[in-house]
Length: 129
Image (cartoon, rainbow, N blue to C red; front, side, top):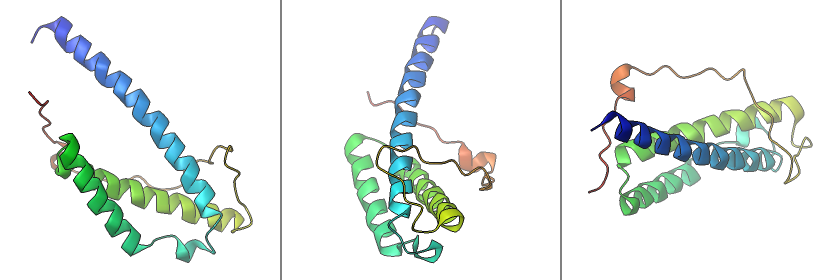
C-alpha cells in the first residue's frame, strides 16, 4: 500500500469517526433525558433490556459485516458508561432534574476510565473484499 493510499484510508476513517462521535453525542443526550424518567440511581440498569440490546447489536453486526467480537464489547462498554452517566445525573439532580429534548447532556468527568490490556484493545479488522 502506498503512502498516499494509506493517507486516504486514514482520512476516510477520520470522517467516519466524526460521524460516530455525532451519533454518540445524540445517543448521550437521549440517555440523559431518559435518566430524568427514572426514579433513582438504583433503577438505572435493566438486565433484560441489556440482554435484548446485545442480541440486537450482534445480529446487526453480522448483517453489516462487523465482527461481533468488536460490536458486542463496544456496546457493553457503551451501555455501562451510559448507566454510569445516568446514575451520576440522578445523584446530582434526582428525577426532577430532567432535561428537555433539545438540551445537551452534561458530561460526567468523575467516572473513572476502565483499564484495558493491549491484548484486549488489539483487534484485527479486515475490510470486506
